[in-house]
Image (cartoon, rainbow, N blue to C red):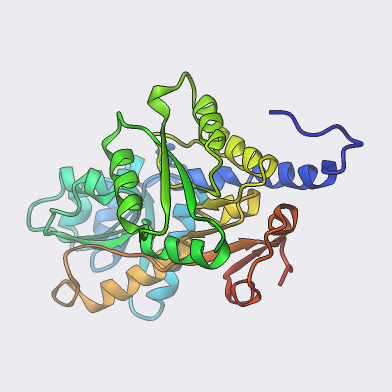
Length: 330
């Protein structure tokens, strides 16, 4: 896909859109298992020093994980001391033996806890995109917060932002259990007045070909989700550009994606994850249900995209949105 020529009427819009696309990398970074670079720690020495404190083990040095740790510190200010250590140098057994309460920030850290912690060691977690895949939903030791926005909240936003949309299009991959589950959940959440058009990327030569097939069905809206079997940064760019060109709004799954060109979207703020997990830690295991809790949901809107698509957003939605793009657009 190529942007319009410089003298094309839409050239200015596409320049702004391409400038925003880089922020999609942040949306994809939440689950990235990059190596940690938070600092060097001697695990055994840390175990002795951190007795009675809270140790947040960060899955990587990705910015969202660091932001969640800051939210945790804020939520526990005046109650507990929080130390952040990188997963790469964390001796989980030694930390547990020290008596410190442990927090996993991100999936890789939580998976390590499940594998290495004694059966009697409780722990907390946040910034987990698929707790069932890791094994957290069945684990009695753990309590925490998922990044999965309830699909009902996404449907409500779609109805408010795009009341005209009745034919909903979405990509999925039938070879992937998680992708199939997401498609099934979406179908179940939509009311009878909606028609869901699913295109299976496994039946096409490429995701781009699947996207072309989806648009050929004349859908009213493209639904996206944090489905790693289908979406990466390149595919998201293609979806956003195709949506604008076909005059079809895109429902995004993060604020950065809305900033980059989706009409509206729901998402989470890593700092919220940390702050809300702090409340769970303060309440204690006896007062908190086992299993992942839903996240605090943030709503984002893009008034520039709405203008381009000639789909004005309700003023009430713009006024109450947590993020309005371009910034200062309220």
